[in-house]
Structure formats: structure tokens, C-alpha cells
Amino acid sequence: VIILALLLCCLLAQEGGKGHSPLEVLNLPPGASRQEIRKAFKELSLQYHPDINPSARQHYERIIEAY
Image (cartoon, rainbow, N blue to C red; front, side):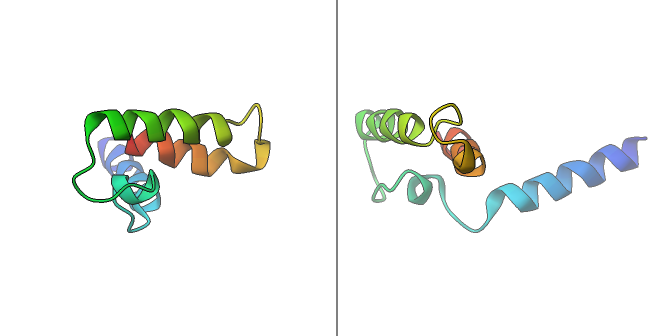
């Protein structure tokens, strides 16, 4: 059971990464301030929220993970 759980965690980590840094996902330059990060998160989460845009669920999850 433990091995299965570790395997699942590894697969999810590989899938979620996709080679993009959190700042790239939020469309921010390196060294962005906390205020810029928060503002970008709020704007993108409203734009890609599954209730508003059901086809963008995976992108919404990446935005949350990046934040």
C-alpha cells in the first residue's frame, strides 16, 4: 500500500510540473513582489475558474498550485 501511494505521488508530481515555474504560470517576471503575485492570482483565478470556464479546469488547478 505504501509503495502504491509513493508511486501515485510521483505520477502526480510529474504531471503537475510540466516544466513551468510558478511565476511563468502566473505570467510574472522573476522577482515579482507579493502584491504582484497576489494580483495576478486573483485575475487568473477569476478568468479560468471552472464555474465560469469549465474547459479550463486543468489550467485553474495549475494556477492554484503556482500561487
